[in-house]
Structures are given as C-alpha cells and as structure tokens.
Amino acid sequence: MAAGDSITVSGVTYYQFLVFPSLWSKFNAGVAGTTISDMLASAPSSVDSHYDRTRLGLVSILGGTNGCGTVAASTQWSQLQSFSAARHAVGWKTIVMTIPPQASGCDAALNDLIRANWVGTFDAMADLGAHLTLGDLSDGIHPTPAAQQNIIAPLVQAAINSLIP
Image (tube, rainbow, N blue to C red; front, side, top):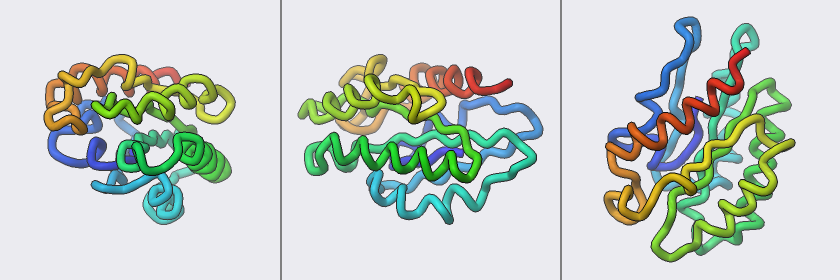
C-alpha cells in the first residue's frame, strides 16, 4: 500500500516496479497535490479499508513535498508520526520516505527530522533525499521515470524486504 502525492501516483512511478510476494495485493492510494495533513485525514478510508489481517500489511508514506516551504517541517514530522501511529493501531507496518531534493532547499529540515527520528515511529525508512539529486527531477519536483525505476524503486524495495519475515 502506498500513500503519497503525485510522486507516488502520476506517470511512471516507483510503485509499479516493486515486487511483492504472490499472495499479496498492492494498492496505490497516492493522490496528486495532497499534503501529509490530507493523507492523515483520508487514511481511514483510503488506506485502512484495505487492511487484511490475514496478510502482512505494509504501507509506505511519501509526503511533504506539497507542504515544503509553507508548512513547518516540525508540523509535517508531527503529522507523519500521527499517520504511523494510527496505521500501527490498525495493524499496518509503516515505511517512511524522505522527500526528493528541492531547489529551494526546503526539503532539508523535514528530511533531517525523518532521518533522526524514524526509528521507533516507523518500521523502516527509504532515504530518497540522500540518493536523488536535482538532476534526477524532470521539473524540479518530480523524479524522472529513470530515477523512479533505478533509484526510488530499489530503495523502497529494500525497505519492504527488511520487513518481510
């Protein structure tokens, strides 16, 4: 299960390259233009309604780009913590991702908070911000199809694999 913004759902995305065990289903709940606050509010219907207690439930969240520069990084981190806690209460395991670099540099504070604090809040982390460059972005925001496939998908796949018993 993926929760996120346009990086998760628009065009060629990392999600289509992920490999799941054959008995798993995968669902992309990404919504273009969404913020972490939006994801937190919609998750009971868009994410939790897909939880199946007979399977290992993994949900990844990639959010923060649409609030970058307008919502304080500390607020976004608090929202990410709330998202994870609410998903854990349902039974999900959670994976958080840092956001891609932004020309304005507004990604740095949120990414630093994620890197410093994800353990104990999330079950795994994929550090996109450490592996993507501005050159990997097609329009200054969205990773190119090649970056989605060759950088993001392997990072997320490694996080998923770390949670498979």
